[in-house]
Image 1 (cartoon, rainbow, N blue to C red):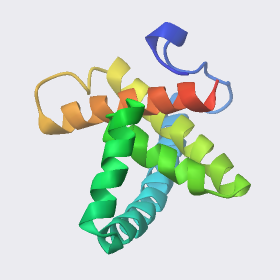
Image 2: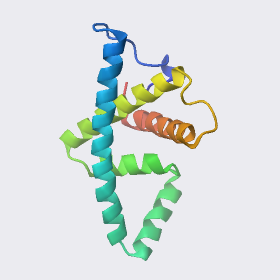
Image 3: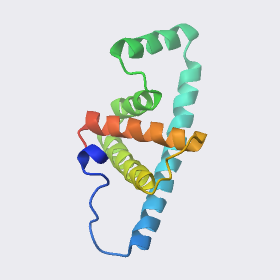
Length: 137
């Protein structure tokens, strides 16, 4: 897990300039977001095909399991339904986005009342929760 409880952002692995590392991280984040956009489209279409009764049943099942964060639920469903290679990709995606968001938090970019900052903080909490669930280091 990343974050203050785990010593903050992952350690710098050396090599390259800080600016070069930042650009590489930004490129990785863009790749992850492209993959997640496609996954969300597929998931949204699949959800829309379910009957209202089945949607309510699944929502009740998740509520009963105690998981209420929609990002954690979405990520867990992706993980649970994925092949091993896709699970490894999701593990990597969670790590990349958590690193980027923790770096943004350290720079103060997640502070404040804006909707973007609140959404980013929410996603960061979900990523940390998924890291715990998946036992990511």
